[in-house]
Amino acid sequence: MAAKHPDQEFLELLAKALVENPGDVKVERTVDERGVLLTLHINPADMGAIIGRGGQTARAIRTLLRIVGSKNNAHVNLKIHEPEGSRRPRRSDDVDTGAIEDLRI
Image (cartoon, rainbow, N blue to C red; front, top):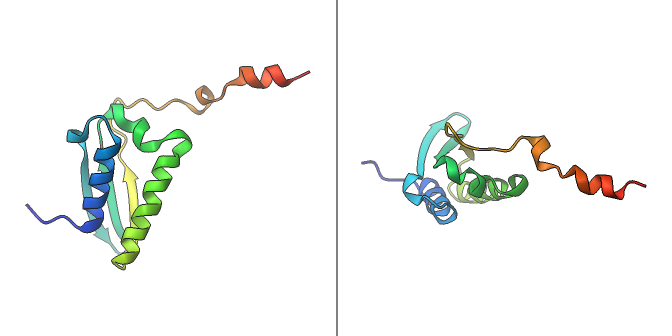
């Protein structure tokens, strides 16, 4: 088994701390002319924990990976693999229109 790179180890450790099924966390690392691409594979039930409300957790993870990458002179990108059967609410399901209707006069 090949040694893991610091950015790959960091993402794996972080993801395992956030999800309910840490055994299902897998990080693939590929390098091309644009930099490093880390693809995060997780259990479908854990998508919400990784994405976060409004994508805040995913944005924070990406920011941290950019910092880790800059320490190693690499441009690191994150792709979160959406597993088959994951549940992501549609945009219209996120909005509580009842509260808006209450504010109308």
